[in-house]
Length: 186
Image (cartoon, rainbow, N blue to C red; front, side, top):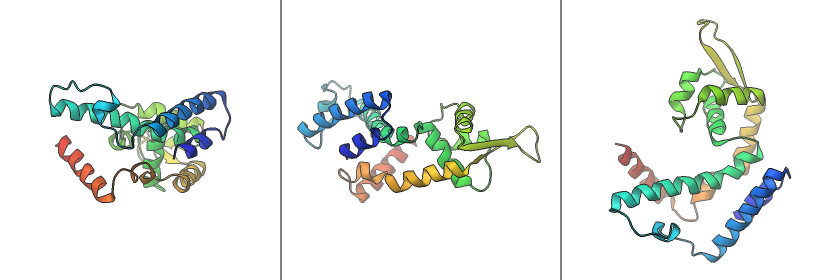
């Protein structure tokens, strides 16, 4: 998997990607000498947790960073951020109907993101379009462009989310983990 990430980051050959390539090579080297399954206390080199609740929060936070890094290279190949990708996916789900900024805010994974600013960047990249709503001139309709749809289709064929998880979790374990996370949020 790391080899695929490394070759993916070299596709565009920018200086920024080269520095990320070095980091991926370092990560690859580290991962090749570490055991497959590291416990959180080994990962962060600390076992001083107040209790198991504290340990769980640290583990969730660490795992979020681990997942973000695993996906980052895929997004960077298309000059996207995780939040931009999230908005494109929401708009594809709405397609051919438009969405409003408020709808995007409601559905975004990262509720702290500035949806308006992200849409501005996607408009600049030609991945979405924005126009005034016909029935309510105060509202703005946002629609994914053909280019945005093409990029998501390419990404769908090149990378599957399960590729990051399937080596360490069975599908049943992934379902159980998801259920526990739902329970955690109440």
